[in-house]
Image 1: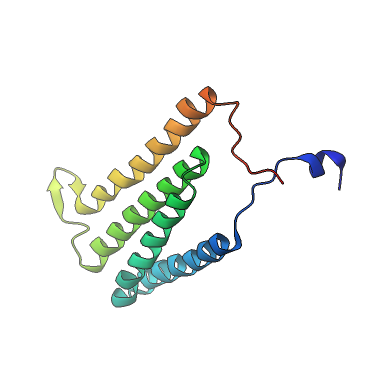
Image 2 (image 1 turned 120 degrees about the horizontal axis):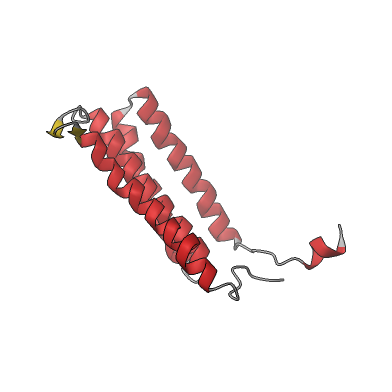
Length: 138
């Protein structure tokens, strides 16, 4: 390992947090597989652990603005994705609200919310807080 690599800051995640993140991925995959296979009960059931764990992860990383913004964006992404899945499962996704806007398009609200959170971080917050460390050093 080079001297530069060994002196670089390291982001450290407690093992219990990492285990929760890994379990979160399992729930997320089960939710999306259920959506693909049209397994409604499992798909709907997997929304809850997937979304709850993503919110817990965001809460636990709140001391680092970078992690908080990305994890909140993931939570609203999961919410949007879950709403979209439910709209397809229960066949109201193609129902028209007004003009060409359908109920599926309502998922764009949390999708764009996630983008706005990340835009805030990258365009506004990060350039104004360059001195802040976003990592834990060993």
